[in-house]
Image 1: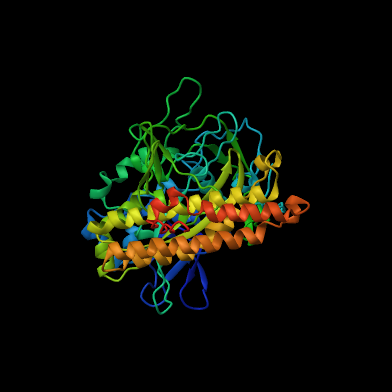
Image 2 (image 1 turned 45 degrees about the vertical axis):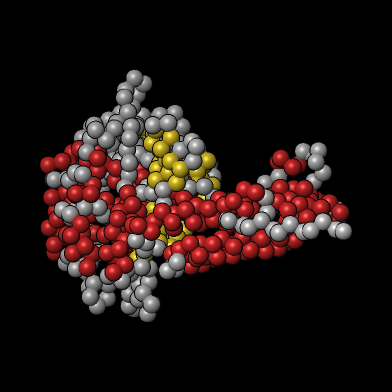
Length: 534
């Protein structure tokens, strides 16, 4: 089975014209027809595959086509290379991207693992959770096309969750959050090109602090050499043991696709007919155990007690995640820093703004419960162009508004439980309000960005910030009272309503929403004292 993931066409993309007409291309063709009918999107059948493929292509550009400095990066952003240039740049690394054959195989162990019991190819998918829990209940039994098997393999290695004893997590831990800087659509509706999406997340060598050459390939792509196994007593693999660019090509799982027994049929992922489907694979524990201060350029991190840990998605992604994803944030226990590509955005924001760029943050990943995926999480957040000398004011405003929103939701949660349950009712602790919390952050999000934008675009930051704080407090007051009224008389929870208890909880909610901590955060003035009655 022959498929080279750098040379051959194997993944589907959408173009600007022809009603999103799709085509199958090779990586070096991503700039094809960029002036008249550009490629604007990846078009795989699964959102996690789209996210993984974006990282694959960014990693490829970072490895084989990194710009020397910021000027060269800007030049290539504005004037993309032609496909022939990309093909020449990728060619020295092509030997590392053979899916099959007798030599090294992409993302696969050099050992055939012949002593291991074969597993069905569907078990490669993270959302099958080792065939215990399925998001998708029914897969055709035939297998996966080689292209879809390659994507499933890369998606697993890049996001690898806990998998039992000795089955290692990804270089960023199990189910990391990925954040990419992407261009927003233009006013006339024109969509950004795929090249822009990818190149905005490639760092220049000067910023990165190192570069790659074809001679480094064996240290960048772990499958070109024997697996660095991790049986008891062996030390973790750090960024000092291998090339730092292995962050894009980490191989924590020992996997070998069974390509020797292909079967004709319909691919269980993209429903295409193929003469040589991959139906099974073998795996073995104690693959590469990544440790130490790895810092992937596409992931935000938390610094705590001199330890560095990648951020992982939880529930949804909304403006409450602004702190740490878009701007730095610190509290008494930890410091949260955005991905390096996001930090680079802040460093170049003024130049991108002057050239008319509008940008967003694309955040995605698996919300994992150890081995089990709870959901795939994906969202976009706006990025604002802010001059460096104005950053501190804007950061403080966003910080105060989000902290105040958290307090408002805490008040709402307490008030609802007061309305539903008596003080000694054990259900007060056990009842989850995830649906109320998700609604709170989603439904207040437009108001947050509107008020934050008002501060960013104002000439007088001080007065604009004061107005925004008052407006934000007013929006949150209205929302929490309306949400309380929506949920308080919820008979599925309470079995029967208690009007007096509901009324008391609503009065407390109004009072708590003016408590001192909120007033301090949002500069709410003290109400004038009423004169004593005569």
